[in-house]
Length: 157
Image (cartoon, rainbow, N blue to C red):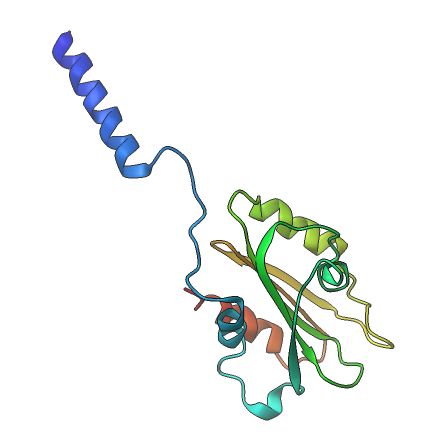
């Protein structure tokens, strides 16, 4: 009986050592700029509007994500420099302990796909990998850009 108990304790100990005591979100090594570069990789210059990047702050986070508060390390958005074009890609690296799935759901529910003058984003995609959340919004005539960006996001490391 003691042998069986000892074997059971050893097996449990090994399981805890191998899996860790809790589930931690794997951290993405890339910065949010590198994540955005990856999302836009494989695009030719004429396939997208001329884009600029803006750092997300407490003052503008609601406009870009729909959230009034978010516990994050860094976040940037890539949007057209001129014109009313429904195109926005937001990359957010969240802090430890943030519930990624809950945050993704809140962004999807609260972001305003009609924030531009005269245009709407019909494609609203919220993805995550490790501690990074990406929001992709494009119009219906994006020639497959949203799908391609989604596929490129899978390359994030």
